[in-house]
Length: 66
Image 1 (tube, rainbow, N blue to C red):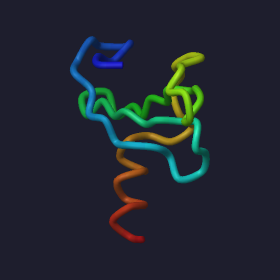
Image 2: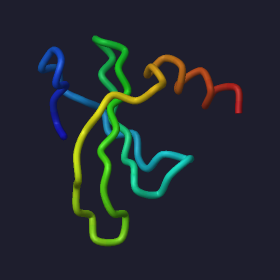
Image 3: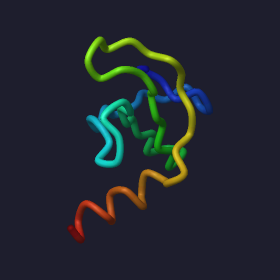
């Protein structure tokens, strides 16, 4: 996933999520959306994309306070 599905802005790849090995995270700073790419961490196959329950700014605050 290279572009935000809401605004078309380029996304920043943030790596695998800490709560699941099959979810890759991407962030759109313009929309403050945290996108999730769901799939298999072993094969790399993708099953779909969706908005996370968190906002990008919330994840950044969490990582700073960790």
